Length: 271
Image (cartoon, one colour):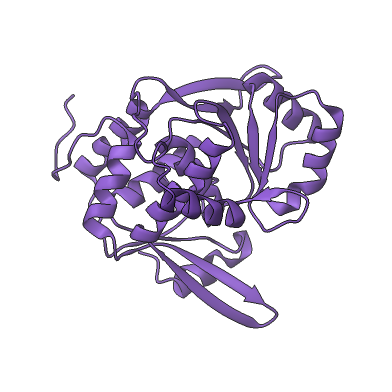
């Protein structure tokens, strides 16, 4: 049975096309809302679509400078801006993204890194102990460890963004000009299977881009909407859903946890 088309949607071949088109349309819109909490003091930082693309290009330029062009980078941590940024930076630079569950037991995490042949990992500060253990054991192919938070012992996203900005000013444009092979593997995903070991799924840019176009044909997404990124971003449903929001000019906020969902829905005026 043919799906009934309700809305107009442009077909895209890859995620780079989608993000660049969204930034062109919605550059002043808020892409992400980041909550900063210090004691009882709460501040909200709005990341525009324009800044999001600048952060992607700056971080990506640094990753290329580190020799990670064409490599595989794992991403692990809770749902947050830096997770989405790392994922998008991988995709827009033709780097294979390996999303991992932050709640994996140590052995399974190490095994997933070995099986995926990841060259680098971007991780949440809360996973520092596990990263140090993985580094010490030396069983993986990891050459680079990048923390999402500012941390003295590791390269980190805030510093790499600043370094990337300087490199771009010096004329480093290789990352920004990267051509995307829409049919090549873009995401290497671990999913629970019927056997004891998780299954590994390969997704291309086109696989995900087509999902986004199809959803836009049948759902009324509006640039005035606000999304709460509740589904884990390491799941393809969560990360593809996030890309749908970005393709539509929607703002995304992150929940404080399961107990706070009702509060967060009101707090961010989630539609």
